[in-house]
Image 1 (cartoon, rainbow, N blue to C red):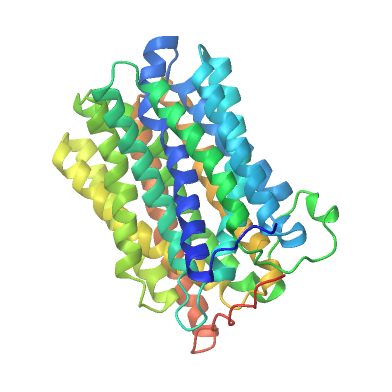
Image 2 (image 1 turned 90 degrees about the horizontal axis):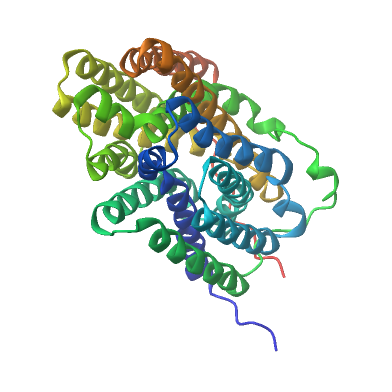
Length: 409
């Protein structure tokens, strides 16, 4: 007997919830890094390696299977990715050393990479043509998910004697149930030929979107590089510079930046995408400058306030970047294009943060963060200037997102 399919609106929000859950799981280890450091006895360099190997695994999945759902359908990729996510949670449960942590993060990265493009494309497939919410949900989900995961893990650390079995045990069950829920989703993508050819590592940007993609790259690099620093070294930074060792407070730093990113996206949702991206970059650059002042003066309150304002800029700029790049993309190219956006993001998310972790062993965490922040500010300002210059050559109106295609049989 065929499985009953969810109606289109319910399927859209089911995919949105699954995307948030996947990204929340990716944020759970951040507050736990200091716990693992204490248990397994490793420093900032190894910590950023554990963080970075996740991003590299995710990148590998984006490059290899990021566009696969455009060829075989969304549901097979979603179900397989969610089951692999459950396996990663089980490995976290069994972790008793750095090797296990590395293995768990590799599995989690592969799963998240496979799911990011497929879930994001599902949202674009299922959105209403008259009021498209796909770009908004895609831009809000990272901040919302990472915030929920980090704060939830921080609360578990403070409130439970043995937080890791509870956290990863619950997530294992959630992802198994999520894989089952995929059976109720309608298949929303036309199946294009060339599934095997799509597995060649590639960054897939359709020709009509290439100019917008090039304009958005500096913005994506600036935003995600700062996000990578906060997620990998943020709790350690609050302890080293401000003497704040409470695990929950360390996770609140992640909430300040990632959580307010959700607010920034919502506030900017009615702005033209290019204006949202440019204005967001400027707000972000000013806020990161204030954050550097807080590191130099030791003002913890300014540090957290600046992180929150930086998050507002992050949310507005990322929403504008996603909407600008994905405008008018053909249905059979959506997963590949979204995966390419996230390839740029996760490269910026991982490599600079690893470099900062290694450098901190020689120059100190505070100085490494200050130099990092200056580079991020220059990138954000450069992105705003480049956007303005390109706008003088672009058409006066934004390209409209094409209507959603009928659901595939």
